[in-house]
Image 1 (spheres, protein in one colour):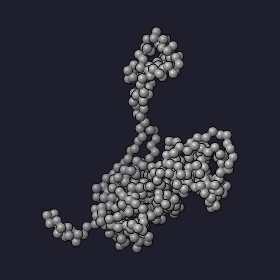
Image 2 (spheres, helix red, strand yellow; image 1 turned 135 degrees about the vertical axis):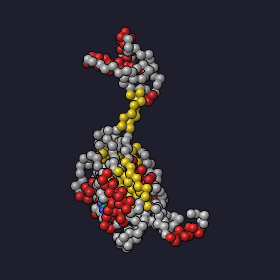
Image 3 (cartoon, rainbow, N blue to C red; image 1 turned 45 degrees about the vertical axis):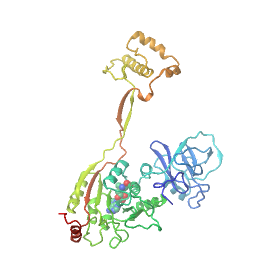
Image 4 (cartoon, protein in one colour; image 1 turned 180 degrees about the horizontal axis):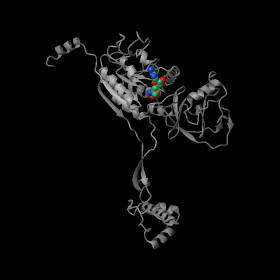
Length: 445
Ligand code: SAM
C-alpha cells in the first residue's frame, strides 16, 4: 500500500490515514475503516464523533483530498460515549488527537437527529500535520526545528539517516519524506546508482519502539523506516545484531537523546569494539544533536572534538509566528496614528473611543473627518444613524487596506527549543585511495 504521506493520490482510500481538519490547530488523524472488523468491534465501520457532528467513515471514503464534508444527519448514538469493549477503547485511544474531541469508532445506528451539525475538511497527511496531531508519548521535534535540521544534514532522496530516540515519531515522519526516492520493489532492486532512501530509527523504550513500528506500518512506510528496540549508548547503531549486524551505511545522524556524547563513540569510522561502522564509508557524515541545556551541548561538543568531528557549530532555532493585521483604532484623518493624547476622565476616554471609531469609519468611507469640530461631530452622529447598507455602498477602500499595519508575535511558541549541535565527519580515506587519486590527477598536490 503506498503511503498517503508520500504519494497520497487524488482521493482518500480505505485503511489509510486521513487528517480530519476541524479548525485551525485542531486535526484528528484517523485510519479510514468502513468495513466489519470483529477484532476492533466495528460493524459498519468507524464514526468520527467531534463537537461539530458525527462523520461516519463511509462519508469520508473516496473523497477528493481537501473536500468539505458535512456532518451526518444520522445520529450514531455514540457522541460522548466511550466504547465498552477494551479493544475498541484501545483503538480510540490510539486514534485520539490529544484534544477533547476523540474519534469514536462505534458502529452507526440509523436514527434521525435534530441537532445542527457542522463540517470538516479532509486532508491527506503530511509530516507537519502529523507533528501537530500525533498522540504525544514524549517531547517531540517540531517543524521549525526539523526542517532546519534536515536541511543542514543535507538529507535528500536516497540518503540514509540514523535517528535516536524515535520517541513519538515526529522526526521519523519528516525524515522519511526527505529521504524518499521510491518504494522498495523486487523489480527494481537497490543498486549503487538507485539508492533507496532509508530511516534507521532506534528507541530503547520498548512500548514506544513498538508503537512507532505500528504507526509506520499503518502509514504505509514499511521498508522505508526500520525501527530497532535498542539502548544505543550500549549497543550502537548496527541493524540486527548489535555486534555482527549490518551497517546502515548512514550519511546523516540525528540524536535526540538525554546524553548524546555516550552514543558518539559508536559513530566513528573504526569503532573500538571492532564492529563495523554504521556510517557510509564513501560519503561524509553529517550529524545533529538536540539538547535542551547548554551543559549537555558542551559535553557533546567536547566528545565530538575528541572523535575528530569537524565544522562543529551550535544553533538555536527561535521560531515565532507573527500576526500581521490592520489596526483601525486611534487613527487621524489620513489614517495615521497621531500624537497620543491620554484622556484624564472617564468622559474623555469614552469620547476618545467614540471619536476614534468614527474616524476609522470615515476613513473607510473616504469621507472628510468631522470628529474634530463639535458641530460637525453632532452632524456626524446623525450620519452614522444612516442605514448600514448606505455606508457600505459609499466605501471605496477594500477592508484590507484600512488602518495602520501592525504586527504582534504570538505569545506562546509551539516548539520545544533546544540547542542544535552540528558537525561533519569526512569520508574514510586510505593511503591506497590517496595513491589512486594521485595517479588519476598527477597535478593534485
Ligand atoms: N525525536 C523524537 C520525536 O520527534 O518524536 C522524540 C525523542 S524523545 C525526546 C527521546 C527518546 O529517546 C525517548 O523516547 C527515549 O526513550 C529515547 N532514549 C533515551 N535514551 C535512549 C538510549 N540510550 N537509546 C535509545 N533511545 C533512547
